[in-house]
Length: 442
Ligand code: UDX
Image (cartoon, rainbow, N blue to C red):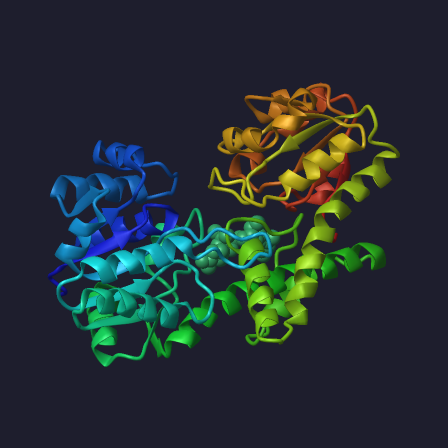
């Protein structure tokens, strides 16, 4: 078991999940952030993100004192041998990743380190960043006229929101990219508790590890865009996309996951990572034209949903539309790049009056939709949303929508359109209740 303290810089989504789960392994963790308010609220036992299973672990590691929260990066550098960077890499205007936060961590390490350090990138960073960090740290050491040894490694995360704890504890693989055998051994040692779950390690060069993350996310986004377009085709030729996906997915080479059609993918990763991959390729005079097409296809998919509603309803102007679900998927309060952020404004532009409900996502959505404030009524549940509505549209597959009493909904609606863009209902049974039902691809 690795018995020194490890530092994790950044208490965003990735840094927190990693810090808490590693502390729960029994490792000694120092979680660092520049945001003082956040650190003091973490110290007081408040966790700023909603993630199933995380709070229990958090309370446990706080009680056991195996995690420390601090704004003092120098303290973390002094006390830890391994330093994970999990700071934000927001997109620039041209969709390349802004690496200033990651570089700042490297500069700090070079400035303050006094003995061997292993610097591990956890943030999603473009290919070549590991090498760049190495030279930044070396420059700082040179300025100080010292020559402490250090290594750099890439250890990308593949956490899904809503399943982050499970993904951390039972990942499909742990990718470790480094040129240094010592670094690889240390990281394997840190992740040893996962061995009990027989998690495979993939040991690669640093550039390969960096690319694995982007290529994986772009590939998954491609699967979704692909099935969305197949779904659109199904609608025209009378096929059922679920039957098609099932038949395709049984081919082990294709696999059944990520073949669920919908209103387009969103979230903090796929939209950003696909664009960053395209930008990285262009920087070296290559094109990943498939991924370029995926990005375009995904944008079209969102607008296609609005077109479909307009088609079926004749007009949207003046209609009351109840939107159920705003987050980019269920079990999260995250609306980053959610289809709702395109679909709702588009409906409003075409004259709709919006009522909406989401179990977790309203505050985040509302913040981004200020300019449409007077066209949107926020409701406290699905039935209030359906009241007097001409149509109800489902944009997120929350379980409470699956279980809702649509008979009761029908009684309060003004007209009977149901647009189920997550395919959560059985079309036949909804139609039998007298609704005009439209799903995606069936
Ligand atoms: C994703 C990756 O899965 C994860 O490995 C990576 O580290 C971060 O990005 P996340 O963004 O949390 O995770 O969500 P995910 O469950 O992958 O879904 C992404 C989007 O694709 C959602 O909008 C979801 O609704 C959509 N999706 C997913 C589909 O439309 N159809 C599918 O079949 C699967």
